[in-house]
Image (tube, rainbow, N blue to C red):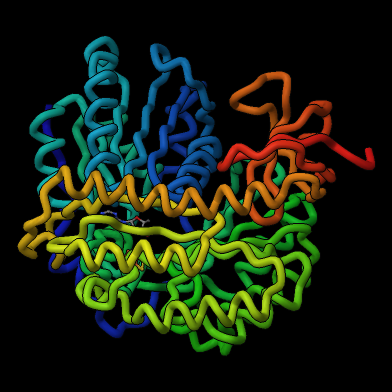
Length: 479
Ligand code: 5AD
Ligand code: SF4
């Protein structure tokens, strides 16, 4: 099979941040009408790994594919297009994808017309792209996050030429608005407000794969949120690698606090946002969160480490003291606040003392939830070049120790919920017990309870009867 290379990634280009105006455009396909004729009843399947940005990208791709007549099917033996939408944040996310392609490649041997595609952050790393191209000749469409808007033209090219197409450009990126929408959930929605990241934390690959920080226009975000409210959505989560930077690159005069307030005023029952970098979390944001009942009192505030030297080496732009002061201000001004965090254990050369600083910070903040990771070197990032004398066993031991600190506080918080009643947005049938429903409290606690399936998508009051650290059992009260 011939390979047509339109673009390949380049980490130097990916790392550059030139001061040039962002291009705002609307997605369009050159071959739309021809593709509609070609698709004619074809089926597609998408599997997504990674963060909420990837989940939203999946929805965007689904909308585009369904617009030209593809229908979704998870019967992999009989689909015509398979897209694996990947994540690059840690090595284990990549390993899962290798396993998955290993399983899927036989389908391509069986059906020569199948398009087997890998897209997203993983293939935006030059070494990984090379490995995928060499190891898996069956994969015949490769594109990055910046090419999502061109998906239909890439599919058209694959179908009409029979060639393997590679289109992955490292660039600062545009803001593309999409005409069609498709959502995986009919009462909870993700809304992108800012793409990319300029923070360049030294361990992180995301600024290289997703381009520069670029905000969507205020009115475009509001229009999308308004249509979700009108369609009966119960919850909106405003999305960005760093939502706090919203608006700084626009000359519209709005910041993230203004945007949050405007969306809250639309009357959505639950408004959430993620992720917030502590460096630019403003007092104005704290005031707005406190002021509106429909802004959930739940903030995901990644700390990564509790030690100043490690924070400096990570390029996080705040000290332990500044972080703790921010938490203090939040807890004082936002009654009932729940905090969650991300923590990386085993950053290069992390000493036992530095690790203990992270544990002591956890004991001070008493997070209500947390995601913990063992450091995973990402080729091309500054941290990957740092000397690391910490062995794997030590990292695993520290990871377990940190989790036990976190769990102590999470458990205490969960126990304190027993006997109290919370509004819960009903998600669906519980994944652990088919006789129960499950949903989330405003503080993002998972609750299982008995109830009728017709309640899915509505907010009910649930009295908590049992605590299981990460989830709760309860019963519906007041109907
Ligand atoms: N190794 C381990 N964890 C990482 N994260 C980002 N990059 C790495 C890495 N190289 C974690 C951070 C971030 C979360 C999304 O993933 O904690 O907040
Ligand atoms: Fe990665 Fe840091 Fe940007 Fe988050 S803020 S995406 S951790 S570089």
